[in-house]
Length: 229
Image 1 (cartoon, rainbow, N blue to C red):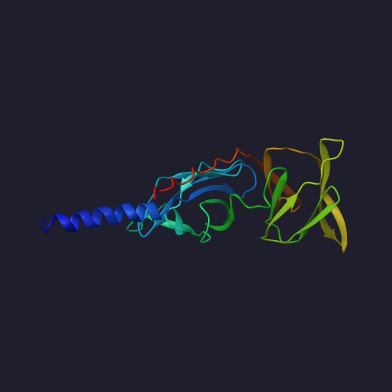
Image 2 (image 1 turned 60 degrees about the vertical axis):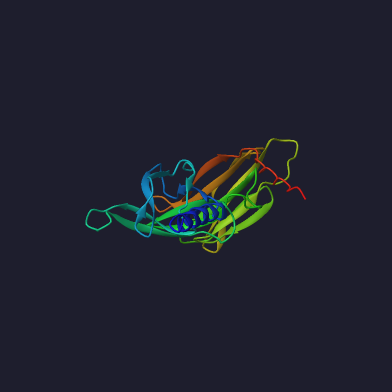
């Protein structure tokens, strides 16, 4: 009996810890020109999780973050654990679903984390990320949004009029004056939000790359069963 009690205590402690530590779901997008992808492993305290493929043409599959602070790693047989960290991730203390924007910087990645349920990032809205060295102004309809370098900025589409689209223009400053480098019509969409990645191409000109994300209906968690009094 004296050996059974400590075992039972450890068992119920483990169950309690699992219940108090909810899963943290993460999806990732690679901020890179073109359509490359990378294979990375979540890593914490020497423990390596299954590989995750992260690309530039769409969000990755959801993977579980091992903690709110963890690393992303690649295989490296020169190290004892066989993996090398290429990005340190810190998630906000609250929330269970996050989008991870990975910006390549040399051989590593700089992470930019946003809550998946960010109230400003809803259907028919755009998250701009400016990876260039200069500020950009986005004009959606008549609404202007300043997008500074290395900043994630949310912009909502203008109110719908009679037409199912609106004018979208991106400006840069040239000799102190605004000059458009992109001008087109974007459609209004009820169940899609967009990631727009601004960068300089090989010729040094500003351009952008967009990734759409289809939003699924929100699934409400079941209400807790009331205990009988």
